[in-house]
Length: 249
Image 1: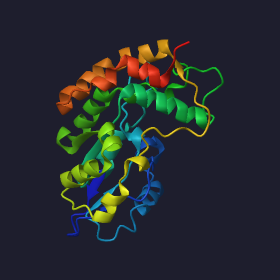
Image 2: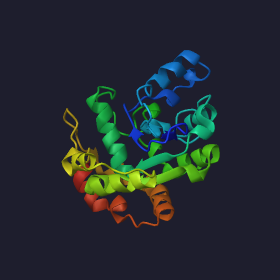
Image 3: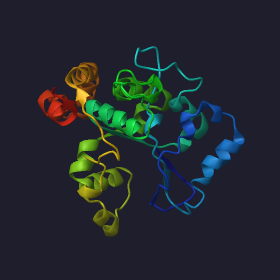
Image 4: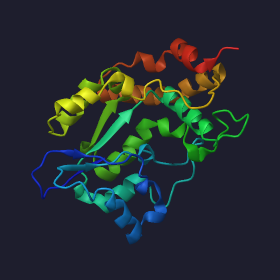
């Protein structure tokens, strides 16, 4: 998310920490101390034109779906709208192919001991959002309803992974910012998280689980294609996904 500080003319972007998770916790609603602590993350922004943070689980609208935990008292999009209102100018969404995203999240939780031995990707607690977070069209509709679709901009993870310099230039250009050469020089493919391995052994999934993920993801893959005007054959390339993510035995 990016919120402008209209009181200053500077055009710099300030982003200090990822995954602050303030708006993911309904207990923070109405808690002035928690809000003050959240605002402290941006206290050193100085005259920065933009202040932003990155928390992937904000882009999640829970509902009555079999893959979703119960709806929270206050969903993140509604919480954001209530706290930031017109101060929030842009929400930048970086979407990854939902099958790879789900498998990556499964391994992430496994590496941190949050998965019990023998639990498959469809057996894990719904609160992990392994499948549900990839239902992009559902979450986008809720965020658009709460904040207005004109504030939401969708980007693709593959563009970041393949061409980080060009990706950074595009995003900064969309925000009306100039990218300093030293910043571009730091944006190298080997520094992206694409292909990063978890610190522990990450066993591949059964092919049947990959097939099920593909089936569940198809409506949202099609939605992203329509929304971006981009054809995304790699997102539904079963052979490549199975080769990379599944155990063929």
